[in-house]
Length: 271
Image (cartoon, rainbow, N blue to C red; front, side, top):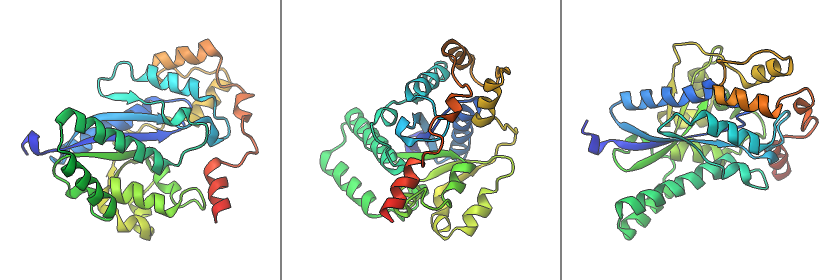
């Protein structure tokens, strides 16, 4: 397909990145290869958006450290960036709102670059906002944002009160997502068993990682607490930063212990 008719895609990954690992970065490369192999897309940018401190996850160190480690990890990339917007918010921000924020920024940047006609731009936005159910894969031109995640995030859609159903509608139905498989996970089966995800199955790209890589941030933190080497699991700059700031101790792992996760607390109160 002519490059001028490919849909340009921005990949957005949200999460704790506590700490960011080589596998987090690998997801972007896998997603880009998969999308561009379809002949329909050209991936132009990747965004890493670390969650803010108000998420209240057990063992979550300060956002300023996680943000800086993410920046260090992408120093050598010419297309993956780190954005601080979500991490500096005083309150926890729903992922759907984060996606919406970057989508708006993306369109505004494209509008400024291409000098898009204002009326056409506004009409396009209204159409997209009113038709979440239209498959993202049917868009053959313009610019699209896709939510990038691992299979664990996809399966978390089934955890009670962790996600609002309307947020799943928006993230998957309106924007689309790329899901990277992990050992022991079966995203296709999970999608099949979920009426909600089955409805939007055409918007979900499942990418198989044939080179098994089971780097886990949880396991990395455990190794660090025990004084074990984590070199080659994390970018060297991140390893040095952790050592310099003495991050990830037994004490830090107890941070937010006993505190209800922000989305569960918020969604339970609403229900």
